[in-house]
Length: 179
Image 1 (tube, helix red, strand yellow):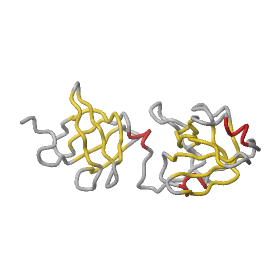
Image 2: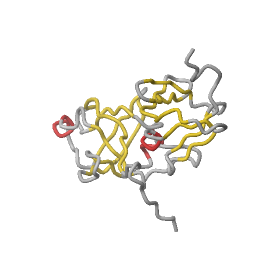
Image 3: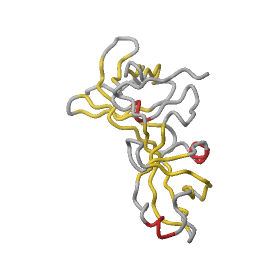
Image 4: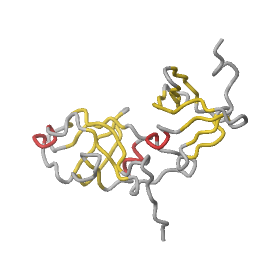
């Protein structure tokens, strides 16, 4: 029996999954830009939501990859006419329905975490955004008016504790030097 999960105020129950870009064919399929790890993540879901409160639900019938997007089919969307209404919509998933690796984190849980030096305890600011340009995630850390980009690599990231909202790091030489 799974242990119940309680959400802190910082943790969202419904997470952004991606965005519907266009229709696909005449039978109600849509082209979907995935903001998650990929098609396997989407395929584990039985339903998605049209709002971040989980009130407007769609039943996911199929999900298949097509180049760098996914083609999705929903039980409630039988034709291109209904699919047209989804264009530009962000879809959400219930984090309780999805499984991620034990050493993985949702971006929504990392944003807002304090970044602290693992050795000295110095506070570097809060993570305000997470980007990925191919090789690794990059954390945008804001302290006052200053922004610092931190690579999320094992040499830098020591520990991520989303419950305590803290990311411990060992900063690379020159990362926070003012000179």
